[in-house]
Image (cartoon, rainbow, N blue to C red; front, top):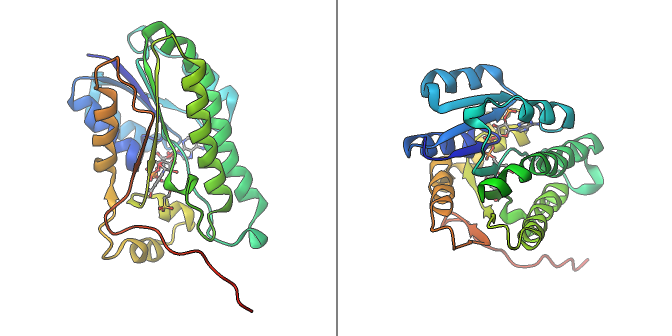
Length: 248
Ligand code: NDP
Ligand code: 8X3
């Protein structure tokens, strides 16, 4: 195996496509997620090139135990892709469910922080790289984006801060900020409403998990003296709208 990548959120969407992309290029991959059946399927598909870790990223003791359990052939991590995350709900802030807000913070911020904290010493040893998945929602607010956008803005700023702290270690840090991509993202956001998901993507030609996996692989395989700080990408059919003005 060329190098080892740890990819969170590997059971669907961007993560699942990235597992395929990196393994096809000869990497060993540690795939993580909560859904064991899907992890087992990945294991069947990729065999010795893949090691699965089942944990809920919101639970720091599960994260710690999982990293400690890595076998010697997977413990020298060269690349951490912090991809696991979610949006819940599209309601305006004043109507939101506080529990959903907490879940987004615990997953997209606390979970990402915890895993990064556990893996950084290994990345410093290997002079590796971190790629954090943020979103266009970090920079461009939209109605109903409230806490989701806030968590992704954290990811952008945390990535820049990491880059600064890791100065001189050789560890690279990139923040990837995608726009609309068809995965299970909207299904999760709408609590399993397939028709809402289909309607959002219909006719829009959104980006795909494979598009994002290509980008992540490109970033990870650049010469080691180059650091891509931030990448923002959207489908051609998504762009910006004017400010809202209330005239009442
Ligand atoms: P998917 O819903 O298809 O995949 C999300 C992945 O995250 C799943 O593998 C899921 O695994 C994992 N995950 C979610 N919660 C947890 C948890 N508590 N513990 C462990 N794993 C968890 O979504 P995407 O592939 O689209 O999303 C990947 C990332 O990209 C997210 O951070 C998302 O915010 C971001 N993003 C997505 C965009 C889009 O339009 N799709 C655009 C911009 C950013 P499991 O359920 O098995 O635990
Ligand atoms: C989600 C991106 O464009 O659906 O992170 O808001 S978008």
